[in-house]
Image 1 (cartoon, one colour):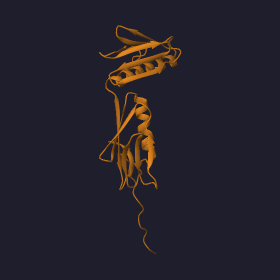
Image 2: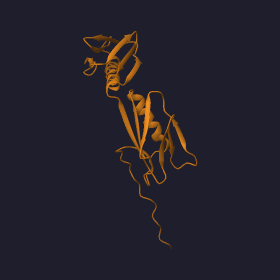
Image 3: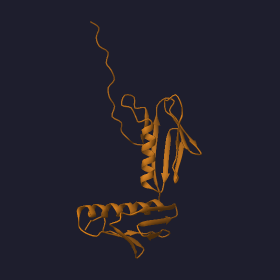
Image 4: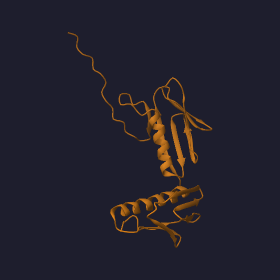
Length: 181
């Protein structure tokens, strides 16, 4: 049996889970999130915990077992603590501005780039260069951070662009002048 999959996901106080067919919905203080589970696995509630079961010991069932249990655990973490990713903008004149629809970036293009945040995601800007993405869905928070970074990824010569906080960008040496003949 999967070492991860066999562990039940405990529901902390204030968090409720509901299973209807293949859909599991988790509600908590930070919000609500639901997900459809793979058809071959079963999810149930036992002793204030969510339990995932698989039909056989096939390798794909084992893989789905651990994956599904981890996804459910992330849902519970999301509605209790929430998830966050931070990006930093580096470059002369590069900045971010918080807007009602999400965020607007000025990153060296001839025009500002608007980014519309999906529902359930909160984007805040601190000091024009730190962008914080928060939400209850770990997948969606990571996807929004990746999409924002992809607008202007850090370039290897000067390091200008959008990067995750703490990300190390490998730098390349620039051109060297050739001696005149």
